[in-house]
Image 1 (cartoon, rainbow, N blue to C red):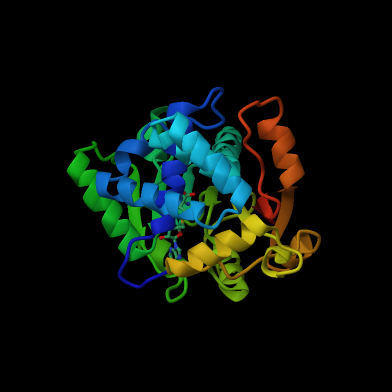
Image 2: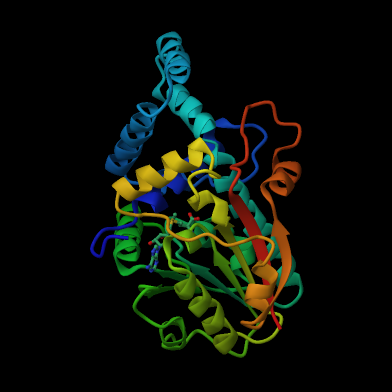
Length: 313
Ligand SMILES: C[S@@+](CC[C@H](N)C(=O)[O-])C[C@H]1O[C@@H](n2cnc3c(N)ncnc32)[C@H](O)[C@@H]1O
């Protein structure tokens, strides 16, 4: 991502969650604070961006969108169509549900620290007061995104929970070990839950594995990480879906290119060598079965995106 600019994709995915919370029934994940957390000018930019997505559609898709646009004056309706067209949306809020459901179980098994890596516009600390009582929470993010968020939180005058800590770090340049252990509130001996959503594909394979390795240095056995990743096919032109190719192109244009995928069938082996047991590896079909079954609103899963849960051995 760009050195001095807050992540646009962080706002984009928060917008998707906000949209889902406000418009969809039943809700997979109710991020009722996300809309307010995104400043108005950024919301306008996102709506513009999503309309731009439209330009990449084929003639039939264009015609469908145009007719929807003329029958409904609501921009949100158009955005809804675009979101459905681009398929990403369902996984974007399903993965947050996956992470927080898994966290809830982990708390029952004694987890006391929650580290959100690449937190973006995550609202957990303000939205989940009951779970907050049982945790120290660390939002770890790129300095530019984190500064932007802190500024917005101050603007909104949201009461800052005492157990919420902000740690700035650029994963490509600094050590997670140093960053987390420099906080006097972080205890490397305490069982910890790491959330790493929407980030792995922006880093190199080595950078991703360095973070995994760091976690084994600062968290005891039975600590957990939940993350999402793209498969390697996403980056092979002949194998990736047209929607994936559109995503890759757009993200390159806005300066947050996705560069790395993992092979779902060798992931367990890859991370075993780093000291992790892969507990769960949800394919797009698994995600669909778990979160989308029975829905009639057209949300679909993205063919290349997986959710995984791994435990420190
Ligand atoms: C797509 S957003 C995901 C945000 C959040 N996890 C979510 O699911 O809503 C990507 C996040 O990764 C962070 N990020 C990307 N590259 C990074 C880097 N090199 N160092 C630290 N954070 C980074 C961005 O700042 C941003 O918050």
